[in-house]
Amino acid sequence: MNIDGDMLLLVGAAFLAGLVDAVVGGGGLVLIPALFMALPQVAPATILGTNKFSAIFGTASAARRYALRIQVPWRAALPTAIAAFCFSYVGAMSVSLMPKEQLRPLVLVMLVAVAVYTFARKDFGSIDQGRAHTSLDTYWSLLLGAAIGFYDGFFGPGAGSFLLFLFIRFFGFDFLRASAAAKIVNVATNGAALIYFSATGHVLWGVAILLALFNVGGALLGTRLALRYGSGFVRRVFLGVATALIGKFGYDTFA
Image 1 (cartoon, rainbow, N blue to C red):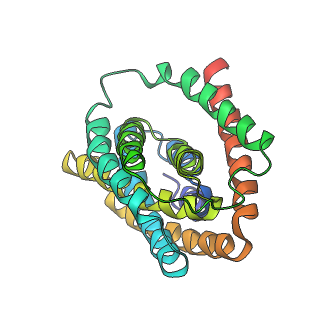
Image 2 (cartoon, rainbow, N blue to C red):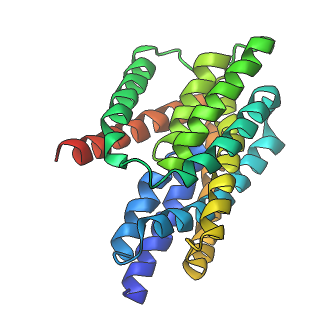
């Protein structure tokens, strides 16, 4: 590893990942490729474990700041987080069972559908509907948490963006409250996967701790921007990140 050049790349990527992730999710799109580039000899599971350690601190700091400034929809976020925690651990355990390349076409299709739907509906996520939470919403929370949790533990890229979209689509939140709820769930998925990766020796602690510091810095800035500029800003960043994810998955699938 080139200490100067590679570490500069990693800390810059960690800061940017924290910023993007705090607003709409998708920080892994930034940091995971940087880790693979800077640490080409390191096993993929160790790359993912190191990323999870960095990400959980940035996500937790963003979640805390959202909770202090806006009304977090806990009745939807907590059941989703509990289910996501359990299934994220299962997903991390299942990393070696199926080639991840088989997931890429499906994820690509879902990302395109999410981006097109959001772009076509100009009012999507612009206003919080403020409707009452029902028992059916709790069932949806558990189901969505299980699905996203497993995906995030097993594969991960785009999980935060999918969560943001689903919280708006199924619970009627605006982009800002959906982002706050997504951060709560992301803390759970990152934590569960990190438990597995650390227990199996797949974390580079020295690198991970340094990246976590910069990830938190980026997350604090990202949360500040989201809170200051509101749902319209979050929507624009969401569409930008979704487009970047589509480009990456399209390249990885067809190149």
